[in-house]
Image (cartoon, rainbow, N blue to C red; front, side, top):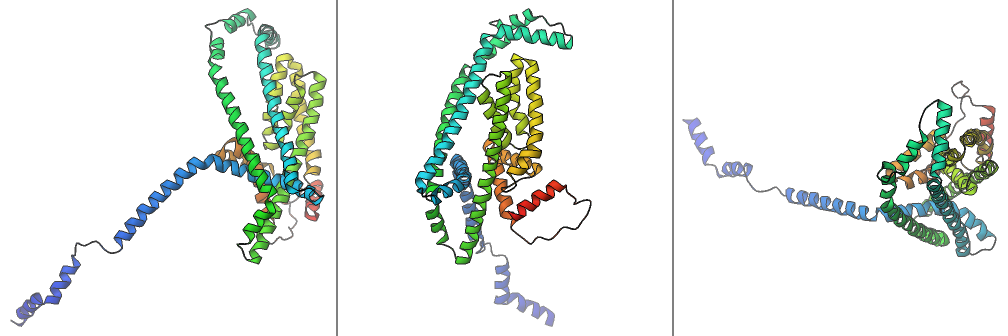
Length: 391
């Protein structure tokens, strides 16, 4: 009886009833509404950021190119400023030279390609006959030159259909060229303001930092400007030497447009790592093989031989006091840059990697390396590393 009375009293207890009702309360917890609001706010913010980044990606790429061009030309502007030039005039002078070289290079390559296409179409019968005769005599084939000519000149043939289909492509390329010129002018304008007002910009940034942080930022900026600019200047000097060497060869063997081809080889070989030399050699080989396969073989041998001379004679001396990158690092950086930003990223990858190498080179403590067959380097390599350490 006592047990039943206790059970009954517990069942009639108002506090126990309230406790049971609270455990099954259907109301939403207090933290649920803020959590849901934060989730949807984050989702909408992410969507907006992605949309804005997608619409402004072109502008961001132009700014990135401008920043690297700023790092490249600022050493020259600083040099002219120390000699009495105003920063605006010095910046304008250097950018004018860059613009003239860029437009001249594009004009020379465009003229070369257009001239070769027109010459190929006008002298197609002679080129086809000579090429087929060379194939037959060299490889023992029995190709009929007349059948190849008939296929090439047939209005309903695949060759003529392909040529006619390229009319719209020519218009598209013209608009693309105009777009490239406009983007190039935008880059030059951004670069002008970044370099001409460089001291003001750095003062504005440093005014938001403590003195110790200012010292670190300015030191990093100085390293980036010095090493990146020096690296680009060294590549430009190597490109000039390469262009002059190849121009002499093209002039001697009578290659069409020797100046344009030499500039192409010089710039492509230096600013595209590892594979740039061989990609740059494709154009002069194609131009030369149409005229003379023997001259094309001479060009191929010269390109390979010059690359070895550059690797072991010119490059170590020119880059000894600037910045030298391991070919694997340069190639990997170019692949990563191409994957992120396409051709522009592949070109910017080299100065970007050089800048990171310069900034990270002063981080951490260095120790003397023990003697081991796994760490032994040649005498020339040790001398180069010693010069770098002293410089």
